[in-house]
Image 1 (cartoon, rainbow, N blue to C red):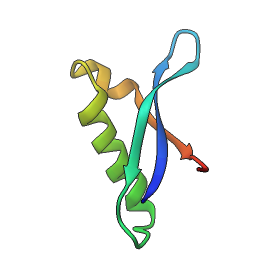
Image 2 (cartoon, one colour):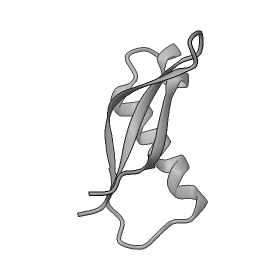
Image 3 (cartoon, helix red, strand yellow):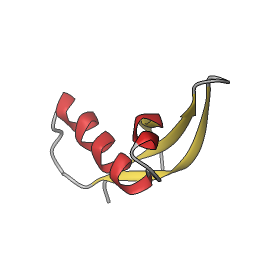
Length: 65
């Protein structure tokens, strides 16, 4: 199984991160800095409810299983 990363929706008024799900990195080799960007795009596609909501979705640190 790959690494799991928590996905948050940021409320910029209160500066709070609200957890909304997880995204799993399925590659066996690390991709470097492109990994975070690819995971961010995937998370935005999966969890955004509107085009404006895409900018509020962020990927957090790796979860320890």
